[in-house]
Length: 566
Image (cartoon, rainbow, N blue to C red; front, side, top):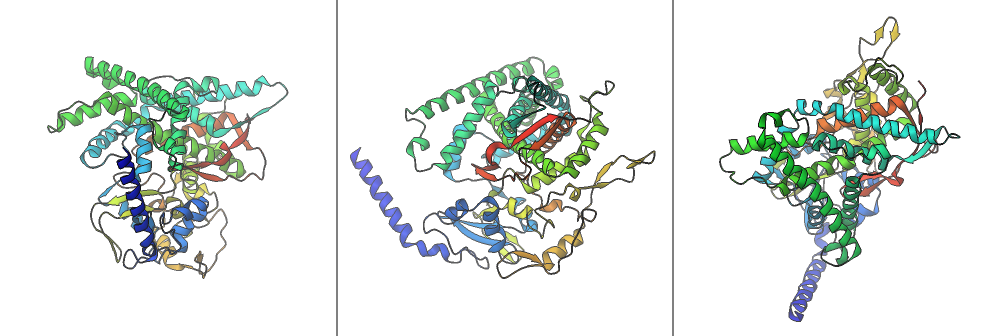
């Protein structure tokens, strides 16, 4: 044992000496024609600067200030060379290339202990293609539409519980609450009802359900352990610590519940396949899709285990748990800070859903596709505050982007946050402007009254191309237009969908995009129909902070909630 420890120590010393002697290589050209960041740490590379800067400054540092005219930068993450691609045309081409998703071992280790080794985010090659195809078949437009009543029902329960909470204090007309934890409760309830056919009941009490508590703890633990890589008590799960014991308890609860539901549902589908097809929960659709996949591929002989199904379900819950709740928190913040956008949103919601006291209108039957302005609010929120501020892929073949050839096995960094806040892609990038995405329809007039019916805008491809040609860097590296032209809100350039990466792109883009958009728009509409959300202080400015693989609002977004008077 002593000899083993001695050998390990000697190996580490040799490794550190080697890295120290090769420290100058961190500032040398990595790829021909691509500038390399010069102020990198000799061992960790770009990581210290990336973590020291706030999210906005870090992305300007990667994507704009140090990039060449084609939007390329290169840097090191420890001993891994990385190319940052900030030009949206090239970023989309990279995401559509032959790629794999390989994260640092620290991330993979802790994510696997949370979501399981078969979570869809980390699978590659044939195994990934098999399960991704099954998920795509489970998340068809028809299947997603079937989940609408469940989504609306959960939202209505949340509204009623909040109204009750406000009424409990006879001397108050409002209640102050942190919005992000509240929306997480709703996201877990929606997942339970739409994906598993199970009612968790968190929205009834406004307290996290047992499932939400377990999942929330495991998610927070993963983030904490990723941030603390040098602590062996965080890195290893076999030490008899309090956090490790609770991690084991909460993981066993989640796994026990999911395995039981999967086993029961598989038995039901096998006993009555026709009845299984009629079920609206996404798990039943997934079981059926995997059965179809197996029947069409004779090379797959083994049954998919309950544990593998649980890994996939954990992946899907993780994808919606934080992203939906974070997006809605920012959306309510943006609306509270922009009264004009709030008024247009509420006007559309009341037109589609009807006023809350209209007994003849059933708001369980509305179509979120009719809420184009609400959709625009979500898109603009995702543009400004993407839950995943960047994404990374690994090339499996050489890739030519413009005049630059990036070799296989290179790690490609897509700075989603930086691209979506770049003036070359979205003029007036720091302003919240839903009108980038929609415009008033010609049918907005009814009986002489402006009812404001909105329709999607078509991007001006020529104007988009010209912006990348005409906007140049000043001496400090910041992107500035050659000539400034003041625009008012009636002349907002249409958004460029090709520069929008909140759902990623290519084969590994978000499989649940339709589900996520339907969920976000539905929750926003039902909440705004019945409730009003205000900032605790008018001058409050949100501060995004990193949280593992994602970002979230600092301080959990406290807001004042009151009953809307229409």
